[in-house]
Length: 251
Image (cartoon, rainbow, N blue to C red; front, side):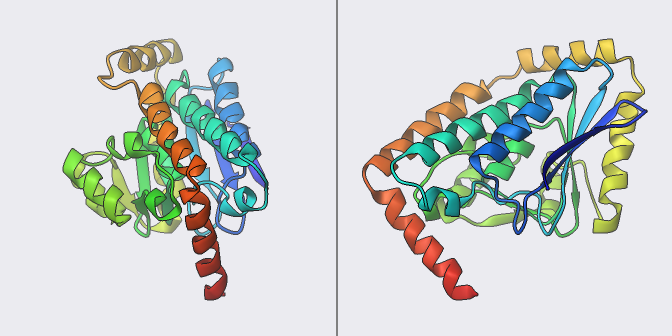
């Protein structure tokens, strides 16, 4: 359980998130994702990374329950810094990152895949940033890399989700495949990358990041400032309590 990393003989490193029941990561979990991607960067035998998940969905964002059972702002600050570290590690990974998305990809999950280099999804996958429901902001930076500006704003303000199949038209998702073919599809495109000279691919990754029109790290950090303001005002705690109560009543 948790975050695992396996380097295959073909140079593909598979990083897997397994945090049942819904893959909502704790503060430590986000730092573990960052550490796995940093390890990939430092290992010259790693030619490409496949970021995947076990369970019903790819990632449900931060662990709200962890945040609500702690006092003060320690968990909030930890989650902010952990997410920032994880998203940054994906974006700045020295080799390309292929995200294999199944089921739900929400909040922090969008932060991870929005900073990835290639996205392959299963036909049950959907994406969303429901932060406004819980009194938080964030990952608009990354959703804006998946959909056009007005679509991003609509999804953000309404907390709606969008199916992986609808993202293919925007070019952000490479392909959508049946769930049982997802790993094979991700490994196929990763294999094409891994077969290239890793010295060239690592240079290409750095070059493409260098010409990116948006500084994703600074942009996301700006968003996080408003999350802190909402928490200091007491709004976020109130909405998280409502969210937790709603989830409990569903059981």
